[in-house]
Image (cartoon, rainbow, N blue to C red):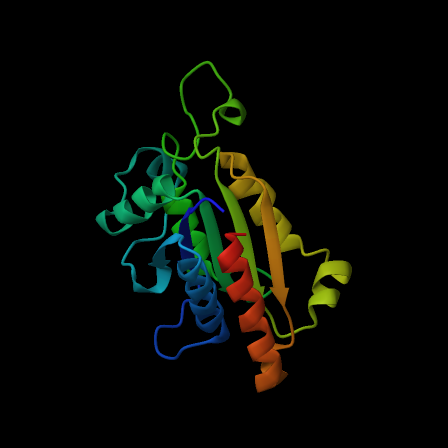
Length: 197
Protein backbone atom coordinates (compact mmCIF):
# COMPACT_ATOMS: atom_id res chain seq x y z
CA UNK A 1 0.00 0.00 0.00
CA UNK A 2 1.26 3.46 -0.87
CA UNK A 3 1.76 5.59 2.27
CA UNK A 4 -0.76 8.38 2.72
CA UNK A 5 -0.77 11.71 4.49
CA UNK A 6 -3.49 11.45 7.15
CA UNK A 7 -4.94 14.32 9.18
CA UNK A 8 -6.80 13.44 12.38
CA UNK A 9 -9.17 16.16 13.60
CA UNK A 10 -10.03 15.63 17.25
CA UNK A 11 -13.36 17.36 17.77
CA UNK A 12 -14.04 16.51 21.43
CA UNK A 13 -14.24 19.87 23.25
CA UNK A 14 -13.19 18.60 26.70
CA UNK A 15 -9.54 19.32 27.48
CA UNK A 16 -9.68 18.18 31.12
CA UNK A 17 -10.17 14.42 30.85
CA UNK A 18 -9.48 11.90 28.08
CA UNK A 19 -12.54 10.36 26.45
CA UNK A 20 -13.24 7.47 24.12
CA UNK A 21 -12.82 9.83 21.15
CA UNK A 22 -9.20 10.38 22.21
CA UNK A 23 -8.57 6.67 22.73
CA UNK A 24 -10.00 5.81 19.31
CA UNK A 25 -7.95 8.54 17.62
CA UNK A 26 -4.80 7.25 19.32
CA UNK A 27 -5.55 3.71 18.12
CA UNK A 28 -6.12 4.94 14.55
CA UNK A 29 -2.87 6.92 14.62
CA UNK A 30 -0.96 3.94 15.99
CA UNK A 31 -2.19 1.66 13.22
CA UNK A 32 -1.51 4.26 10.55
CA UNK A 33 2.06 4.90 11.70
CA UNK A 34 2.77 1.18 11.96
CA UNK A 35 1.77 0.87 8.29
CA UNK A 36 4.08 3.70 7.24
CA UNK A 37 1.51 6.49 6.83
CA UNK A 38 2.34 10.05 7.89
CA UNK A 39 -0.05 11.36 10.55
CA UNK A 40 -0.78 14.87 11.80
CA UNK A 41 -3.35 15.78 14.45
CA UNK A 42 -5.45 18.89 14.97
CA UNK A 43 -6.92 19.13 18.47
CA UNK A 44 -9.77 21.61 18.08
CA UNK A 45 -10.20 22.12 21.84
CA UNK A 46 -6.61 23.40 22.11
CA UNK A 47 -7.10 26.13 19.49
CA UNK A 48 -8.06 29.71 20.29
CA UNK A 49 -10.46 31.15 17.72
CA UNK A 50 -13.69 33.17 17.76
CA UNK A 51 -17.08 32.05 16.55
CA UNK A 52 -18.12 33.60 13.23
CA UNK A 53 -21.15 35.85 13.61
CA UNK A 54 -21.88 37.12 10.10
CA UNK A 55 -21.63 36.17 6.45
CA UNK A 56 -19.36 39.16 5.91
CA UNK A 57 -16.92 37.86 8.55
CA UNK A 58 -16.98 34.40 6.95
CA UNK A 59 -16.26 35.80 3.51
CA UNK A 60 -13.93 38.70 4.30
CA UNK A 61 -12.43 38.55 7.80
CA UNK A 62 -8.87 37.32 8.16
CA UNK A 63 -8.45 33.71 9.24
CA UNK A 64 -7.47 33.55 12.93
CA UNK A 65 -3.73 32.80 13.21
CA UNK A 66 -4.40 29.70 15.33
CA UNK A 67 -6.16 28.07 12.36
CA UNK A 68 -3.54 28.60 9.66
CA UNK A 69 -1.80 25.33 10.49
CA UNK A 70 -5.15 23.50 10.33
CA UNK A 71 -5.69 24.76 6.78
CA UNK A 72 -2.13 23.85 5.81
CA UNK A 73 -2.67 20.35 7.22
CA UNK A 74 -5.88 19.95 5.21
CA UNK A 75 -4.01 20.80 2.03
CA UNK A 76 -1.22 18.37 3.00
CA UNK A 77 -3.60 15.49 3.78
CA UNK A 78 -4.88 12.90 1.36
CA UNK A 79 -7.23 11.45 4.00
CA UNK A 80 -8.99 13.24 6.86
CA UNK A 81 -10.50 11.55 9.92
CA UNK A 82 -12.85 13.51 12.20
CA UNK A 83 -13.59 12.31 15.75
CA UNK A 84 -16.39 13.76 17.85
CA UNK A 85 -19.09 12.84 20.38
CA UNK A 86 -22.75 13.27 19.48
CA UNK A 87 -24.11 16.13 21.60
CA UNK A 88 -27.80 17.04 21.36
CA UNK A 89 -27.98 15.05 18.15
CA UNK A 90 -25.13 16.86 16.41
CA UNK A 91 -21.41 17.63 16.53
CA UNK A 92 -20.28 19.85 19.43
CA UNK A 93 -20.57 23.57 18.75
CA UNK A 94 -16.80 24.05 19.02
CA UNK A 95 -16.17 21.63 16.15
CA UNK A 96 -18.87 23.28 14.03
CA UNK A 97 -17.29 26.66 14.74
CA UNK A 98 -13.90 25.30 13.71
CA UNK A 99 -15.25 23.96 10.41
CA UNK A 100 -17.01 27.26 9.70
CA UNK A 101 -13.74 29.09 10.21
CA UNK A 102 -11.45 26.85 8.17
CA UNK A 103 -13.85 26.04 5.30
CA UNK A 104 -13.71 29.59 3.98
CA UNK A 105 -14.51 30.77 0.45
CA UNK A 106 -11.30 30.85 -1.53
CA UNK A 107 -9.77 28.03 0.50
CA UNK A 108 -12.31 25.20 0.54
CA UNK A 109 -14.37 26.24 -2.48
CA UNK A 110 -14.17 28.87 -5.19
CA UNK A 111 -15.61 32.31 -5.03
CA UNK A 112 -14.74 33.66 -8.45
CA UNK A 113 -17.53 35.88 -9.73
CA UNK A 114 -19.74 34.55 -12.45
CA UNK A 115 -19.32 30.89 -11.59
CA UNK A 116 -21.02 28.58 -9.16
CA UNK A 117 -19.19 27.46 -5.98
CA UNK A 118 -20.67 24.02 -6.66
CA UNK A 119 -18.18 23.64 -9.52
CA UNK A 120 -15.16 24.95 -7.61
CA UNK A 121 -14.52 22.33 -4.95
CA UNK A 122 -10.97 23.07 -3.85
CA UNK A 123 -10.42 20.07 -1.57
CA UNK A 124 -11.02 17.42 -4.23
CA UNK A 125 -8.75 14.41 -4.17
CA UNK A 126 -9.15 13.80 -0.45
CA UNK A 127 -11.17 11.10 1.28
CA UNK A 128 -12.51 11.14 4.83
CA UNK A 129 -13.86 9.07 7.68
CA UNK A 130 -16.16 10.39 10.41
CA UNK A 131 -15.93 8.63 13.78
CA UNK A 132 -18.80 9.48 16.14
CA UNK A 133 -19.36 8.28 19.71
CA UNK A 134 -22.83 8.39 21.29
CA UNK A 135 -24.82 7.25 24.29
CA UNK A 136 -27.63 5.67 22.28
CA UNK A 137 -27.31 2.46 20.26
CA UNK A 138 -25.74 3.29 16.92
CA UNK A 139 -28.48 1.37 15.08
CA UNK A 140 -31.12 3.63 16.64
CA UNK A 141 -29.18 6.69 15.49
CA UNK A 142 -28.62 5.28 12.02
CA UNK A 143 -32.14 3.94 11.32
CA UNK A 144 -34.55 5.91 13.53
CA UNK A 145 -32.78 9.27 13.40
CA UNK A 146 -31.35 8.55 9.92
CA UNK A 147 -27.89 9.67 11.15
CA UNK A 148 -29.07 13.15 10.20
CA UNK A 149 -26.17 15.18 11.60
CA UNK A 150 -23.50 12.89 10.15
CA UNK A 151 -25.24 12.92 6.77
CA UNK A 152 -25.41 16.72 6.91
CA UNK A 153 -21.68 16.90 7.66
CA UNK A 154 -20.92 14.50 4.81
CA UNK A 155 -23.10 16.28 2.24
CA UNK A 156 -23.18 19.93 3.24
CA UNK A 157 -19.61 20.41 4.44
CA UNK A 158 -17.23 17.68 3.31
CA UNK A 159 -18.98 16.89 0.04
CA UNK A 160 -19.53 20.57 -0.73
CA UNK A 161 -15.77 21.18 -0.79
CA UNK A 162 -15.00 18.02 -2.78
CA UNK A 163 -13.95 15.57 -0.08
CA UNK A 164 -15.08 12.10 -1.20
CA UNK A 165 -15.65 9.34 -0.52
CA UNK A 166 -16.64 9.81 3.13
CA UNK A 167 -17.12 6.75 5.34
CA UNK A 168 -18.45 6.65 8.87
CA UNK A 169 -17.88 4.72 12.07
CA UNK A 170 -20.67 5.05 14.64
CA UNK A 171 -19.83 3.90 18.17
CA UNK A 172 -22.91 3.57 20.37
CA UNK A 173 -23.67 2.90 24.04
CA UNK A 174 -20.41 4.45 25.19
CA UNK A 175 -21.72 5.15 28.69
CA UNK A 176 -22.17 1.43 29.39
CA UNK A 177 -19.23 0.19 27.36
CA UNK A 178 -17.22 -2.60 28.97
CA UNK A 179 -13.41 -2.75 28.68
CA UNK A 180 -13.51 -5.70 26.26
CA UNK A 181 -15.89 -3.81 23.95
CA UNK A 182 -13.65 -0.73 24.10
CA UNK A 183 -10.65 -2.89 23.25
CA UNK A 184 -12.53 -4.32 20.28
CA UNK A 185 -13.28 -0.83 18.99
CA UNK A 186 -9.64 0.14 19.44
CA UNK A 187 -8.67 -2.86 17.34
CA UNK A 188 -11.10 -1.80 14.61
CA UNK A 189 -9.71 1.74 14.54
CA UNK A 190 -6.15 0.45 14.54
CA UNK A 191 -7.02 -1.65 11.47
CA UNK A 192 -8.66 1.33 9.75
CA UNK A 193 -5.52 3.33 10.45
CA UNK A 194 -3.32 0.68 8.90
CA UNK A 195 -5.55 0.72 5.81
CA UNK A 196 -5.74 4.55 5.78
CA UNK A 197 -9.50 4.20 5.56
